[in-house]
Image 1 (tube, one colour):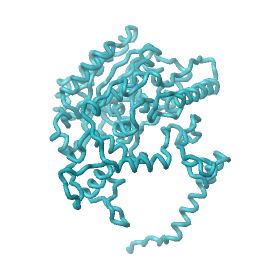
Image 2 (tube, helix red, strand yellow):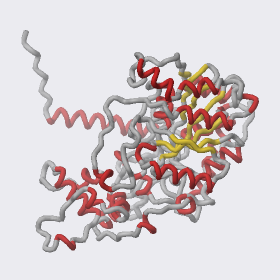
Image 3 (cartoon, one colour):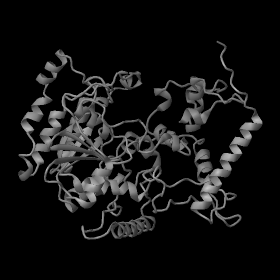
Image 4 (tube, one colour):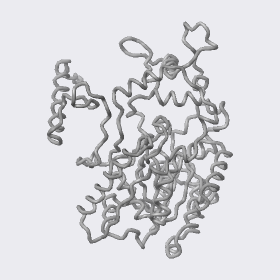
Length: 491
């Protein structure tokens, strides 16, 4: 039987298709905002010859359900992008380890920059009244940050995303602040710590996650540092892979080696017992008897793991069945409970997981349940709506979407820390420059100066030159001019 040939699609038809799509988008934008002019560039002022500034996103949430929980950040203007691009072509100014590789809480966060806290509300008030009060308060918080003397970097500007955090904190009995152990200072906002411990008065457990990506002495040093700085904080550690350490951050040779993680995802639950033990130590007395903590902790001990591994257990497969049925409640049902039910349910002990994007909150939940119950991704902000997962009939986990909390570190540092989606970075050159000023990137990548350099030993590198050399080394070239694709190499 002859195969059917595809119908030819000419360039003229493709042009008409793109034109129709463009007209459809203009009509949709005109319906949402009648004053919008498609002939005006998004980063230009309406006055001719006026300065080009970035538009701050509105605090009004999007009406489209698909984009309702999409994170909103400030955008760079075209002038700022070009200036940063030219600055990346300048010679690097190397920093000493004391100046470039150290950061304290005072360097990352300012006492004058806080997070929005949900205004007081009662059950007798209507939904419109509560949401109106929240919107007015959030707008005033945004204006206060804009008028602040501190230079605040990227932070979440969508009210709907902040509402997810407020509701998770309200319905949770114990809050787990997930922190990436590679940079705990950046991932531990003091304003969030004060909001949980002082404003709500709820217990907090700090989880140092991804400990398999650093050396053991690094983990111990950070735990000692946090215990000295915050004596009341309960600390625990976690990693989701069975290897003791995939990367040793204290050895340059180990960091240069490319170690691929196993394709088959393993939900390692050996450290879940320590996590539950930390939660038991801070659980309220009246709810301590709701959960059989001893039996739950014993389920994740090494002995039980060995018994399960010797049998036909499916804990290493993302598609296998769990040992016990795990019920996952719908987000709308949990949302309804947060609005009309009890703020903290007396039937459950709820563990709320909060923190920055891409720190591993959803992965910890999958490791606890021993199978994939919440989707994960390398892209920051993958989780859009908070969701609850039952571990036992009386113990449930609440996964909160990651939020970028306001801080005073540079935008390149936030991009390098994985708080911002790399695909949405307008210009990546400043991030490479920030890294190259502190770490010899050209040595780590074994890059060579251009072939026409007279003195390769004393060649002065720039961020642009590093990206260009990396593009040549990887074979990244533009399709038309066959020039090194610096932008692709920089990404």
